[in-house]
Image 1 (cartoon, rainbow, N blue to C red):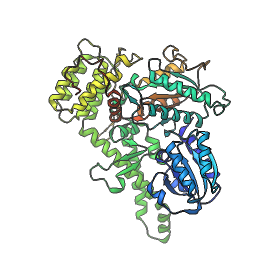
Image 2: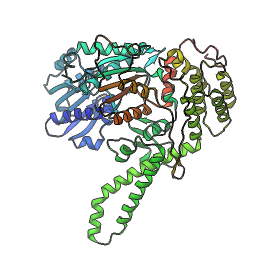
Image 3: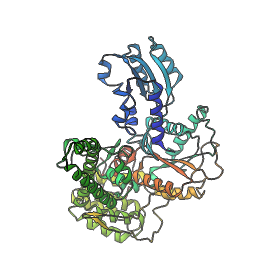
Image 4: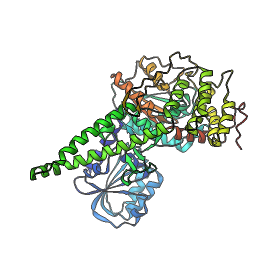
Length: 569
């Protein structure tokens, strides 16, 4: 099961079915993101696609026809898109149209399109199930920044999530049994809706599988700690500190950055260095960049000796690769340089040490003292302090000496923004002990947070951290066939006998890159299993807190009335 390969196979099918010749690809905002996650523009052009256009752009509606071009149309089957496409077909600009929808389309909509195709320019209408963002081979996202209102499903988000997961199942050719987290109505609602679509479209799901796969639906609120933590592996760290948006990282705020590096693409499909380092930790990346730099300097030196026509010829032939290596090196040096400067400037190693301890063991008085010490440190960012208090509030919510009120007073004295302080209350309403099924915070953990450092490069510490996301435990239980039916009941009357080999885990409320790493490591060490992880989005701490804020807006405070020094006016 590989979601990137699944999307790529569909794109190849789309470009090859329309016969040779110059083509234009007409998309909408969402399908543009779907394609750009797996292909660079130059790769698409190698498939004879010379123009990429948006159906909903003003330029498109005004552009003159290019009748000699074939038009590949790749759209989500929304009402708005059907209407725009009807207008396009009524006054066609291109000679032939091959229409591909990213999901199941209603027969009534196909009839409407046929009625508008008066000039008979449509050669093909098909469903190609690419209605999700393929992030890593084993990770996908629906691309929804928030999915809840007042701690219940936002209905358009529920509908979009159902469509996204249906597309994942169809593209991977899986017809799974469905299990969900028992205490979560959100998970149950989603599972029930997916089951209904699978029953209604049963002919599409007749795959003749050797063994039945499993779709396991989990709730983000069962593990609210993972998205709050600082990260130390490359992809996760870049997302936490700089934010990855559809494989793009905005570096325009980095001091002294050149114009061409103001936005960079980080895609394991198109960047061998990133592919190799994506799951490695901070110290290892530093060493690998140094190696890349050494290789580059060797190549650069060999190019300096140009004494004959033959030397010139060799240089010109090697130059495109040399230039590519140079561009890639500059990109990663810039990204890692910025990560390094943020780690030092904001004392993130010190912060992370305390985060790791709180997230993986019980030691109330020591944790309280450590947080107070950091609140007095001017170099630490207010957001990091507020997140530490959130971790403390979650860990010690029911502790007899809980001092969240006192910590909030210290944050106020320090001038921490009201919004951050409110989020301490919000996260307890969102994912306090009342909302969690697992008791991962009540388990005494005697293991000390192990920190091993080695200096491979000045200023880069290689940090091994203690925290394991809850999904780690869930996967272990799954592998042993011990996932309790009472905690993870089945939807409908599809039950599994034996352990499933192919499992799709979906987290309502967003997955994280730390969980993606957990799944990657599990797949590697358990070759008989094939796990794919998905989420409504892929969170970092900033986007997670924005989702928590949205989900708890207008919610009556039931579990935080004791915290009287935070007002919501």
